Structures are given as C-alpha cells and as structure tokens.
Image 1 (cartoon, rainbow, N blue to C red):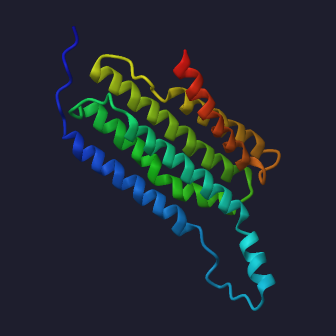
Image 2: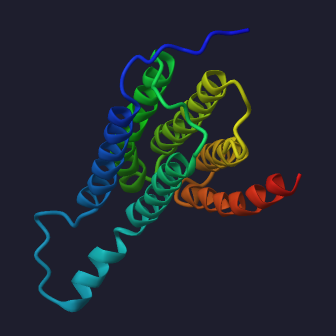
Image 3: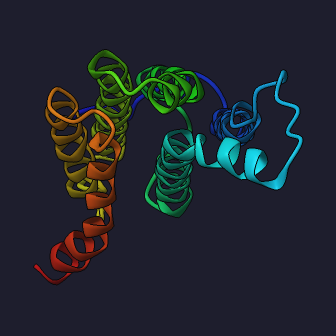
Length: 197
C-alpha cells in the first residue's frame, strides 16, 4: 500500500496564494483593457469608433475572464482535496498559477493583434492552463488515493479542443479565431453528461 504523502506546506497557504493570484490576474485583465492614452475624441462618433476598435480585445477579455472564473470555481468546488499540501501538489499548483499570471499578457497580444502568431500565443496559454489543471487533479487523486468526482478533466478537454480550433482558424481568419472559445459553453453539457454516466 502506498504511504500517504507527507505535508510539504500548509494547504491553507496554497489556497490563499491561489485565490490571490486569480484575483490579481482577473484584475489585470480589465486594467489591460483600455483605450489608448493619446485618444482625445472631439465627437461622439470618434469615441464610438474608438470603443468599437476594442472589439477584439473585448472578446479576448470576456473569454479570459470566463476561463479564469471557471478554473477558480472548479478549484473552489473541489471538496476531495487532501488536507495537507504534498510537494507534488504545491508545485503543480504553482506551475498552474504561472500560466494564470501569463493570461493577461496573452489576452492583450491576441486582442490587439489579428495575426496568427498572436492567436497561437493565446491558444498555447489556454492549453497549458488546462494541462496544468489536469496535472493538479492527477496529483490530488494520487494523494487521496481515489478518483475525483467530478474531476473537471472533460471540461479541460473541451478547453484544449477549443484552443486548438482557435489556433487552426487563426491561420485562415485571425479576426474570427477567438469565437472558437465560446464552444466552452458546451462544457456545461459535458459536465451534465459525465455526471449522469
């Protein structure tokens, strides 16, 4: 029988750091979503035009905020986590938080540049967020010695698929690529289906 992993750090400290990083990243998303400083509209039409120019960034903001919110909610709803944080758990959470902190940057890159490489940067960030979240669930399952129900992995799979689809679309129509992330709304259906099975 496998021995219970030794506590590396207090789980409450890992949770506090996680909450803080998510809150900071979500705040940075909106701080990065701004009008140019040199914009001084002299008419309503100029202001409306400037706001409409933020369309790509707005879509990236909405997607990024919803993804971060769903990751945070998924972590907050997990009731089967170990009582103490093993070294593998602490490091897997830190690795995940690294990609959380990169999301505001990749959001701005994708939101302000309708180019395939910008879409790839954002997509890669999303894939790595999902993969590291899957890694956390695997470490939790190892530490508690049973399978998580729900694990969140099907939803992470939908996120990975939508990111790959977005990258593929980006090579043909980069201004439409971000819409692929709205397929993540299907995660609600995936969750209901997996809960029935």
